[in-house]
Image (cartoon, rainbow, N blue to C red; front, side, top):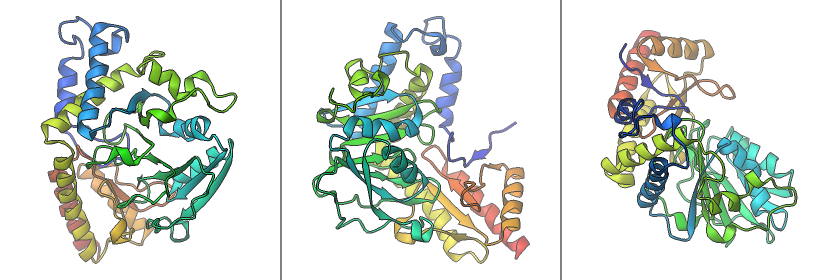
Length: 360
């Protein structure tokens, strides 16, 4: 069977070259006589895998020296607790609510202190990013939190909020490595890798060193303290070794494609094909305000739930997989991450045109 075009929001499409290379190394990783799946995380071979992965990520994102890179487990959702446990010194934080994940993060943080929701786009089903140029940032806030790209709703912060000097914490799970980023503007950038970087099971945290302290909230478990992992080079306990190995391969793949500038260019080109069609379609329409559209996740609807279901079913038969929208919003969603080829988006639009002709 040939490979389908996989528009899943995560776990999502990975570069074919990476999968082939991993397949070739599955039984014998570079003469070790074993798979990376079987390898000790204390071995020389794995030490090189994780060191190279970190260095390649630092190169790609131009991560300053005063930031640590941590490869952790528990997904982005575990960070919803880990962030307040480690950063909420004054027991106060400001959250900007632009979707389900920011909402969940804010709710979790309330277990540890006061959460101020200083901006929200819930009034219009999270179809836009609120104006964050002059926010009522709390004087005693330990940090300001955003979810930078909203996977479910297809919105993206094009301009970072003015945090008025407070530490910015960002969940970048679904836009990780999709474009260049100025790491120095954030205190913490983190994301689950299963959307744009690797298999499920790894979350990468990039954190400024001054935020890594022993001064955490009472009762914070050892495993949920950033310092534990920073001091141990992400090897405090057995890490998600195979996942990190695949992430490392994806970093090398992005480098070989020309880095984050090239990724941004490719992603803009792909997204334009889909958005241009949606803007002139008589049947389909995008659900996001134009200025806030994500390059990674594109939600759209016909306005008729039965027709949406028919579209998803027939698209699957045509080799276009995982186009059903998130259960909380319905409709359709095409996730067009770095590894989705341009041809995949063209194939989707061609199918949408055909479907429109047959169903109008």
